[in-house]
Structures are given as C-alpha cells and as structure tokens.
Image (cartoon, rainbow, N blue to C red; front, side):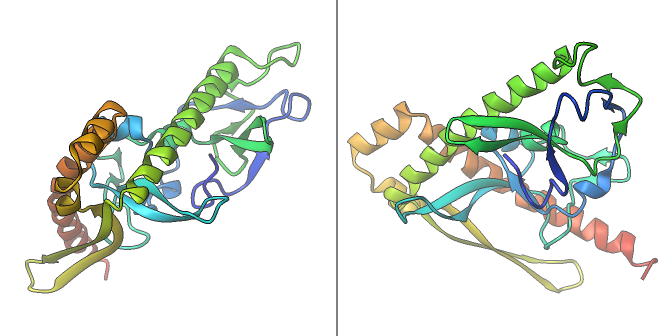
Length: 250
C-alpha cells in the first residue's frame, strides 16, 4: 500500500533502469516518520501494536458501493504532525507498524489482478553501496524477492482488515472518540477524530453475533483495541516531556 504521507516520490522498480541500484540497510531518516502522529496497522498487528500504542479506527472514505469504510491506526502523538514515539535515537517503542518497517518499498496496483513493487526514490539509502536489488542477469535478487513476498503477504492482510472494518460498520459498533487530559500546568489537551468501539452496543449484540465475531477473530481485535487505550496515558507523559524539552529552544 502507498501512503502519500510516507511515500513522497514513488517509482516502479525496473530491472533495466535500476539494475545497478543498491540499498544501504543502515541508512536512516527519522524525518520521514517524525511528522506522523498516527499510521495504519493491519489486524494481524493488533496483538503487538496494542502493547505500545493506542489502536483506534478512522473514517476511510467509501467503497465502490458507497458504503462508509474505516481503517485502524496506531496513534503516535496527540497533535497533528508530531510523533512522540521517536526521538533522536530512533523509535522509543519495541514495535513498529509493518508498513513503516517495509518502507521505502510498497506495492502499487497497475491492473485489477496485477501489482508491482515500487520504492520511494527520495529515501537517502539508495545509491551505489549496499544490498543489491538485481543480480548480474538483471533478475530480482534474493533480497528483492523477499521484500516482494512480504509486501504481497501484507496486502492480503490489508484486505482482511478492510473486511473486518466493514463488519464493525455494519453492526454499528463504532462511535466517535474524545480523549481529554489536564497537563501539569493546568492546560487542557483534547484529542478527537478517532473512532472507538461502543461498549454498550457491543454488550447488546445477540449471542449469535458474539459467536460469529469470536470465530472470525474480530472479537480478539476488539479486545486488543480496548487494552491499547491505556497507552493514551503514556502519550500524555511523553507529550509533557516534549513540551519541557522544547522550552529552552523557544
């Protein structure tokens, strides 16, 4: 999946044009993620992501039939453009969402049944040194094949996650979420724009619906989401730390 907030200059990987291109696996550019205050996570990531971030849903447009869609995200910060989960040393969390781990690579759909491997040409790790992307016969290297396999597997999980979100919408289980916090100086901080599971509606589901949600794994995602909300308190702590650290510069 290509995200315009992450992939800035996307080009298709070409065996002729990029036959000599290499990737420095040690390259790092925190500027790429430091401005992300939230990012998509697939359903299979909930069990890990819920230990580190608040995991919530956001509105994600409409499907081909006009039905509203939602997408789950991990929250990194409490203000637009600020990622509290990274500092000068890198990520402060033990888990990093899959799309960010796979970056600078992504898949792009060029036909209903065809997708191609792309990469962000602006990533500073590309050059003449590092891991080869194509072998001497201009065939994808073992590294590139592994990347493609991971990307394709993740796209499958993205579709499953979309279908899970469709069930939540169909059952009316999501509601607007608002988080309020009082900072040490007495100022108020409000975070909204997210969707959370409505526990009242969840508790009113029929036994048949509960069984169905349990069997398809959606109940597990809901429980992980509920557990993850406790991480909001840690984000508030990191937000206060960041404010204190920024004061001298101001």
